[in-house]
Image 1: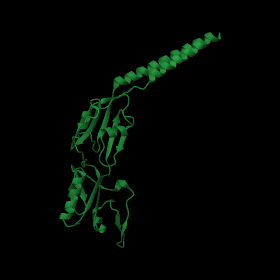
Image 2: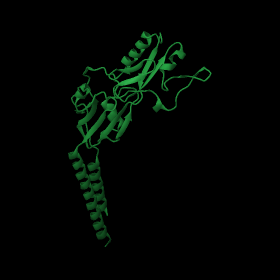
Image 3: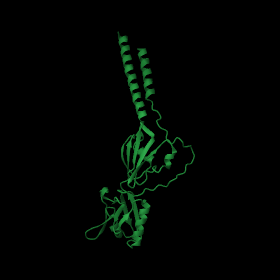
Image 4: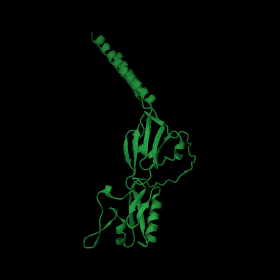
Length: 266
C-alpha cells in the first residue's frame, strides 16, 4: 500500500505541474521603466449620426429656457394654469435630440442644426452663440452630453456584448478590461477596431505587446466602434492536446491503481 501512496503523490504532482497557470500575455513589452512617453493626442468625442444628445439650456430666468429643453431634458415644466414646476421624464430613451442620417438635429426655435463632426464643446458654443445672436437668451449656459454612447465587444474576450459608456471617453484597454479581459486563445497582436467614417467602414489591427497602441487613432474608441479579438487557433489546439494528455494520464493512473489494488488484496 506504501507503493500505491507514492504513486498517488507522484500523480498529483504531475497534475499540478501540468495545470499550473502560465503567464499568457505580457502587455507593452517595449516600454521602459520610468521613461516618459508623450501623450500625442488630446481626445474629444465627436457627434455621429444616430447619436442621441442631451442638450440642456439654463439661465438666470429658468422660464426662458423651457422651449429649448425639449424633449424631456428640462428640469422645469409648465402646468395648465401657467405655473412653472420642477420635474423630469422617467423614460431616459425618450430624452434628447436624435442626430439624423444627414448629421442634423431639429432644435427648438433655432431650426435644423448640422452637428455631425462637432465635439461637445463646439456644439455647446454653437447653440450659445445662436441663442445670443438671435436675442433669445442673453446669458445662456448650455450643457451637452451623449445618451447612447456604446461599444461592441466580439471574439476572444471573456464577456462578449455591448458596453454602455458613461461620458464620452473610453480607451481600447478600458473596453477589453470591461469585457473581462482576453482569453488564453486570443491573438494579442490582432485586436481589431472596426469604425465608421461617413459612409464607409475601416478596420485597424493593434498589438497589445507594443506601446505603439497609444498612438493609434483607435486607442480612444468612438460611438458604435466594434472591437474584435481574433482567436489563436494554434493555442487552442495546444490547449486541446494538453487536456487530452491530462485525460490520458488520469486513465493510466486509474488503471494502475486498480491493478495494484487487485494484486494487493489477492
